[in-house]
Every structure is written in C-alpha cells, then in structure tokens.
Length: 184
Length: 184
DNA sequence: TAAAAAGTAGACCGACTGGTCTCCTTTTAT
DNA sequence: ATAAAAGGAGACCAGTCGGTCTACTTTTTA
Image (cartoon, rainbow over all chains, first blue to last red; front, side):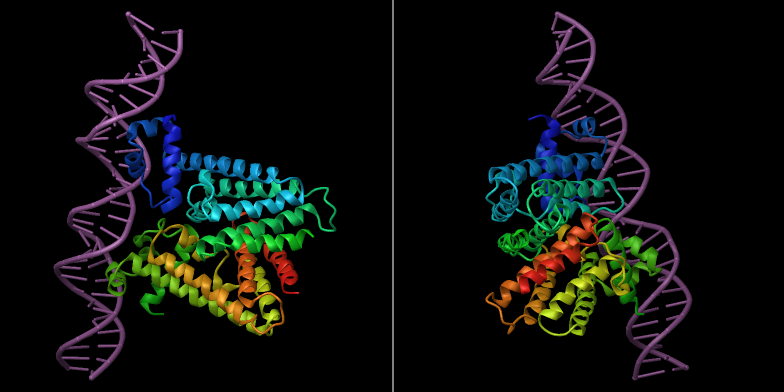
C-alpha cells in the first residue's frame, strides 16, 4: 500500500471513531509509523487529508452499496435491498465499512460550517439519492421517482441515525417495512 | 440573566453552529464578556459546560416539542403534529430553537466516543421516543406502541438529517406522509 | 454597615496543535 | 550506475488550548 493510501486508511479509522478535530496529525503519524515530512509531501495540510479521507469513504461506501443493490435485482427490489445492506452494516457484518459508528459524512458535516467538507458531505448524500432514484424511474407509481427517492433517503438516514445515536440496531428492519409500504 | 445561563446560551449558539471542539473557551468568553475566572467559578471544566449545554438544549427542545404535540390533540394527532413542528423548525419559524443547523445531539455525539456526552445524547433520543410511545399506547393497532414509536423516531431522525446534510428542507413533509401510512 | 460572595482583567502556565526544516537513508527509474 | 524522488527521525516554531492565579471591584446579604 502506498504511503498516501496508508495515511488515508488510518486517518479514516481514527476520524470515524473519535471525530476529526479530536484526532491530531501526530496521532495518525504514530499509528502509521509514517514520518511527518512524508505526510506533508503528499498532503498540503490536515484539511487536504480530511478531504481525501471523505473522497475515499465516499468511494468505498458507494461501491459497497451499489454492488449490494444491483445484486438484488432491479427497481424496487434493489431499493429494498438497501435496507438489508444497512442491517448488515449496523450489525458489523460488513468488513470493508469497519465497525459501525454511524454515518461518517453526517459526523464530518457536524464538525464544520461553510466549508469544503460540507459540500463533499452534501454531494455524497445527493449521489446516493440519485442512485436510488435511478432505480425507481419507470416503475409504475403515481408518485414521481424523485419524490420516492427522497422519501427512501429519509428512511435511510433515519435508520442510520437511530441505530447509532439511540443504539437501536434493528432500525433498518423498521425502515424497510415503511419502504415496502411506500413503494407498494 | 445569571452568568451561568448567559454562558450556556452563548456556548450553545457557538457549539451548535461550529461544533464543540472547534469553539474554544476564550471565544465563549469574548462573546459574552464574562471573565474567565467567573466561568471556572461556575463550571469545573469545559466538559462540564458542554454537559450543561446539552441538558439545557434537551429541556428547550423537549418543552417545545411536547407543547406543540399536546396542542394538536391526543394519540395519533399529536404524533403527526410532530412532523408539522419539524417542518416549522427546518424553515426557521421557531425562534426558541435558533436557526436550524441539524440536531445538536447528533452533532455532539459525533465529536465524542465512550463519553458522558454520548450518554446524554442517547438519553435525549430515548426521552423523545418514550414520549411518542406514550401518545400511541391504547390506540387500536396490530403493531405495538413501542414498535410504532421507534418507527416514528426513524422518520423523525431521517427528516432532520436529510434536511440538514442534504439541504432537503421539505423532508418533514415526506416523513409525515409516511407516518400517516404507518399509523393508519 | 460590614462581611461574604460574585465578578473583572488579564498575566501566566504547561501541554499540545498544525506545520516547517535539516540531515540522512532508501527506493525507484533511466 | 547515477540521479532523482520518496521516506525517516525528530528538532523546532508560533499559535492556541484549557485552566490557574493574583489583585482589585462590584454586588449581595444579613
């Protein structure tokens, strides 16, 4: 693994667990054994590393989610599979996502205001909603695909937040039941 | 207003907007004009102030929410009024909650791990779910009040997260529509 | 009115932050 | 083989962090 990737992986793990402001650059260095000079050779600043971490997590999460959804079929089947995937995530059955600690983008977004980080988080959320919507167009429904996709997103966000903050690890199952009713 | 209250108000405003770790004690002092000694006369540490702020916000939020729900009637009517209240909050029509910046407890929870703060956030969420549940017991339904209350909580959390992170300010309206279907 | 409590201003402290720099070694590519 | 790039170890920097302390003033209370 290249040094930048090594740093991004370690940084994500620490940021995800303890928060971004709570983790100093020196902690990441100590964790990886990488020299400070090397870090600043590849990243202009901590901020740049944070952004790289967000982009990395976006890719990992989207790749995982899309593959899980596509494997389940098309249209509504794919959308409902989203909640099965979430359920696996909450119960730590998805290694690539690391032990469940809520949504990294929601958490990162909470630590900044009027910042590039916020844009990256918003874009990540919009990407997911767009992907859901793409699976819904064409399906017969009196409700528009856009409206349905946004509703599904509400269920998805709610399940994640409820599972993490309130410790309700079965939130995805309830969210799925509501999604079934919505898409029927 | 007493000094402790003054500090708590200003601290909440700053923490809510910029994050807890991002706001130093000196910023709060400068904002309020209070002397550092006075702050440490009333609070043992920044941590103690943070906890006081969480308790304060819990009270303000719960008072507002319960009064909005009770004013709408009983049972399902109260529960559905929750989403109307959220819609007002998202659109900055609720002065006591300050301009909408997402859920303070979700944000605070994101900045700590294995900490008193996390317990306070979890308890806040559980209090709300319990209150919802209390409005649902007795209502005829094949689903238990506990299950319904948790589902409503998923919708509520989802609406807040979606409104804040994705900028979908009408998320409460969609959540309400799903709540109507759920409680029917 | 006098003692006690609460408040102010700000110097000061050690610890830590993100970031720079020097010196030296290892790896890579031509 | 050799030059360039990447990496390591860590001293060092200015700034900021939470928190303490002194000296003095204001407010409250009995």
